[in-house]
Length: 618
Image (cartoon, rainbow, N blue to C red; front, side, top):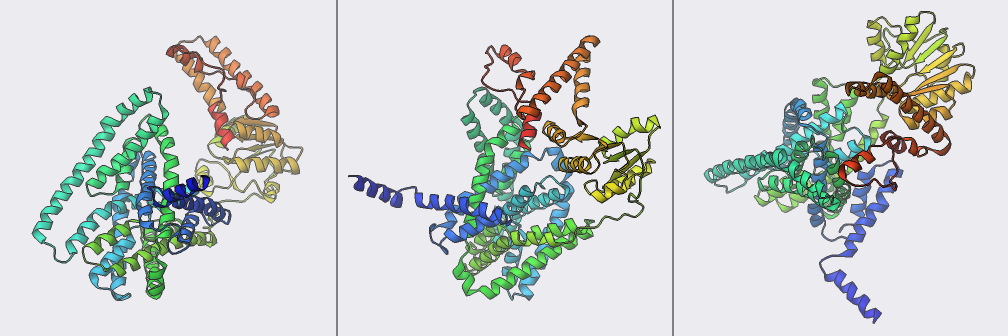
């Protein structure tokens, strides 16, 4: 009987609607390959691509239809763009308009022209075919570049924002490119196509208006109603509905699904539900984006590569070098320094997922044969596979050396007070000492630009890295009575304290702490005094709030001193019992909220200060 049941189950798996073997293969490949590749320093993207190639029809054959997986997994890119949109408030996006429509159009136009000419004169392609191949390769892989920037934490950096701006323009560019391909297709009725194009433009505009209308006037009231239902799963379903609904509307209008999701994210970026939406979508985004990379790896047709390997190899090299060179040259002409220009060129030198859409449309219109479609698709996929490798080469590029012209290094300083770090914290901390006028103060910092600015205000700052023992000796740490560690990096501050306490035990060490966890770390390192950088200003802020609420000045002082005392007691408890100790010393608004809502606050949920939570996560 058991054997019959097992046989029946196997038959259902083999012939039913869900092929569990493929699902297990996809999940297993990602679970095994990604941690392995990340441990080897090769990145998660390359791990997914390699895993996809291994289990695909041209590897072990565990997944027979990579195209179906690819179509489903494109939702990962859609969800990724939605999350990026949540980080882009409309004002911020408006501030990037020059990068999007200026830099983006210049880059797409220049790269498209160069790759088209290369296809004609270097690869021997017909002009129309060269145009389709070149413009397809111009459309960078949003998924790969975004994933790499996200892993590095550079999505919000100035250089990262320029790359994101160009990617957004490229997502928009797929629309006119598809129209051009349709126009170039043989046997087309020009008059009919012109009418159809105007209709398509109208439908596309209507789609954009619909998404904007829903985002501005419909979604927030709906989410407010759903939040009042207290059903977490409904909020998750609503978050996915917003993303996929916006994508569907834009796709119906002939536009990019990813662009629709991005617009929905931007419109919700100022919503009070923004963080809830991001938390709900993130797990699906990560899983589907990984599935997308697996599908790209599975789509690499090794048979086509084997028959045309010479042409594909030449095309990959020519296209990547030309595209990367054009991006680098354009970046330098527009004022970027060497390092960010080179990084942008390497990151964006590959083709992307929208090329598959363009090639498929061109094949359906008779511009490309099936063989050429497979060749160009393989060219793009190989360029995507090479990108994680090429980004690793950036590690060997020499970092720009800061010019020390007009900046002095410390040499035999003898001040009885040594300040390390002269940023926004150190600048304020130095004023009482300087105002007293009875102490000799030596100041070092490793930010040349900041030193130059400080010099214009009459300060004498020496260039030096406080984490180096030779610099500390040259700065007079051996003779200083007091050493003030005011740097803004936690690791550097702790390292300096440990170094000073080890090498100059007679000096007292005061340090700026980033958060509560860092304060505990500094005390354990032997610091004589530490202060969290926002503690005093936050207390004064709270005191002024009470004063504005007409609380008596004496009572305000007593309340603030009570907060200080409880903080000292909690800190002492945390030194012994860890970061979660002393929770009972915190004052929470939970009881007030419970009274207002008519419920009773239960004691089962521990009260954790946001600062503690942040420190715990670091």
